[in-house]
Image 1 (cartoon, rainbow, N blue to C red):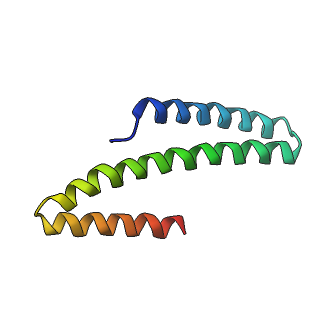
Image 2 (cartoon, helix red, strand yellow):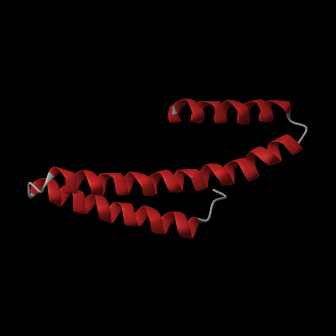
Length: 89
């Protein structure tokens, strides 16, 4: 992985803590909007980490593939990105 590992891990561990908190909130029958707000906060962090990972992938892995002469690697990288875009939509 070419993204900033320390940053990604810190954010993912934050989300893990948030998820544990959300589970407790559900178990405690907390107010729905409070639970929803915590869910949205967790989703926002996950989206941010995903953006950083994809950004690093494009700037490094995809860039390197296009600098090489390996046409199959280039095609594979394009298919990977198309697949990710499909999932995001």
